[in-house]
Amino acid sequence: MDDSQDPRILLVDDEPTLREPLAEYLGGQGFAVTEADSAAAARAAVTGDAPDLVLLDIMMPGEDGLSLCRHLVETRQIPVIFLTARGEATDRIVGLELGADDYVVKPFEPRELVARIRTVLRRVARSDGADTAMEDWNYRFEGWTLDPLKRKLTDPEGVTVPLSTAEFRLLRALCDHPRQVLDRDLLLDLVQGRTANPFDRAVDNQVSRLRRKIEADTSNPQLVQTVRGGGYRLAASVERIPPDRSA
Image (tube, rainbow, N blue to C red):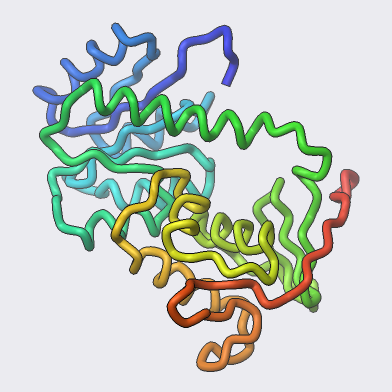
């Protein structure tokens, strides 16, 4: 995001009585807002210059917000905040597992939404602007290679293993803390970029999905191990390798 420009927000909601006044309010708070009334319109809106963040309703006619979120985070790595009337924990967990950065339950206080937007944008800016010399270096463990720039995981035979955004964030967090026990609250904070919340199953489900991709035997995991009463750890040494800029 260019600091000289207003943050660009794509607001996706099929209900004009919510979308239009919210877009006006956000515009008054210093955001450049584009509106979309469907997933199809949103897909068209991100084909060119991608927004800095998407505010996304879950319940829409046609393609729903969950499906669109999966597309946005896996193909464009665009931060997503869900606007949802669903209050059940399972619905929020599904959204977080798909890689959403946050959610706000309708009806909401617009000032709270603005605060959440700015929090997510700050986190993304810190991630993009990190000045650590090894920030873009690959992780290598037990023959596996994780490329943080391309968000690509390669197995010991050189075959690419697809990762969702949530799985990538989880594996990178584990690689950043090899052989350390990371409890669920800390993993939620590292993976979702938000303060810890009580929905521990979101992390458990992500770990199960990641294990299916990197463990030879998921019933006896050797890489991502469960620490009873503690959390999870990557039971491997991690080496940092400079990326191949010519690839």
